[in-house]
Image 1 (cartoon, helix red, strand yellow):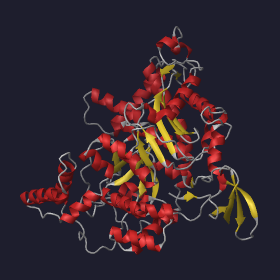
Image 2: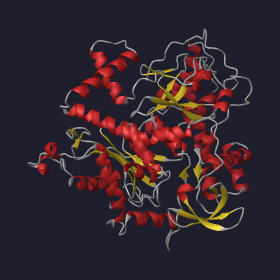
Image 3: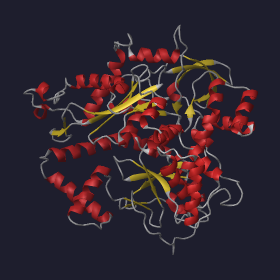
Image 4: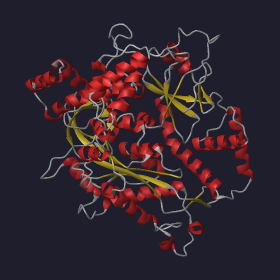
Length: 624
């Protein structure tokens, strides 16, 4: 992902001209020198761009676990050099200690400094001799992995040599060529130290050693040093958009900067918390906020953005997804899991949630914190706010009230504390203005849930719905060169509107929208699809296709229009869908702008494509 660096000396572009940044003025402007006229001028940060994109080889979802672990190992080698700026003598010592050539370390440093991404350290598999030269038999790999999981990562603490003897024994029993002992040692070396201690010692020892679980959570020492994220049901009953009748309580996902107590991002939904809730909150936290505030109709400034150094998360499954972990590793974000039943580790986010709910208690339809507090107040009868109105209200509170009032523990406002950390004070130097993501739409797509599918003659099938666009044509019948099986590709899907999925082209290295193959079908959400599927299964229709799905949707929609919305559940779903569609308007507009391709250039991609006749269709993969 291309980043815009605002530090002194950085080269940026404004209105087609090249500038060198001389000084950071405030969170909205920098002083820069025009490199053609040598005149200095104030530039608005919002309109600065970086022309030269950072290129990387693969999408992170395409990278194997082995290669990803090797990239992490390389980063551990160069970390001391990045932090202390070692000279050649120190680098040579590190190289000898690691048994690698010092020029290799210089090469890794150059790649990482050019991108700042872990992905840049992924080993290249090009030009490594004949195919299969560095690989071992797939069955031997599975035997070795099982031995590591069951024998090495065990409280018995077997030495590597004993584990290897068992690997050789099992390989011979399976009539498979055993791997070399060094291969096993390399696989073990790629394991995280925390994982090894947790499995061979105990989770408690690993926590004490790697997660600071004996004391309070460490304070953030600079802006975006530590971001805490958590969910909570909100103490309010909402109403639907149409008849303004009660539909139930929403959920709030909230992110706070520990250093300044600034709210860096939030997300409100009627659906229970999930990875999607986390990803949308994180996206809101990382990206600039001007477009978002304009979209929901808030006047004010929310000048906080950028990748955090670390995230403090609880142990819920929604925070444990592989997608979130890889995203954080890619951008150098450390994840710290808050121990179960240890509230001190989430103290800041818990207090912010408490502060937020006290404000919510002033709204019509509040449930208060409990039945005793609520007393005779009828929350359902008094409810008045829709989901979109609540989102606007909570944003107004954070942006124009909470950020601008004195915080008891800081003795200053969160916004003043944040800017002090950025620009510095008499006692401490500042961190400087955080780098911005250049392509915000692309990052928004990256944080959507991932699915992997093969490309067939008919297109791509996800949850019994078929998608197709011409950009898929050259990938039909693609084979994975390693396994000789149909190749799977990365797709992203927005649960709020599944009428379009986003295909990552591994050669062009861009996302492309892929609509329904039958474009006459209406947009629906994933939650609506799940409800339709449930109803079809209730009718014992285990085998159904997309025709049955959208016919059922049409019937449900007709019933909804003709009948009065009389139950909380139906109003809740209706309101959630309307809110989802409203939130998608902004994203869809920007995606359409950024995915247009020159038609003549696009046509050249398919000059040598054969006709589709007689193309073999592989057996459909099971949906995840």
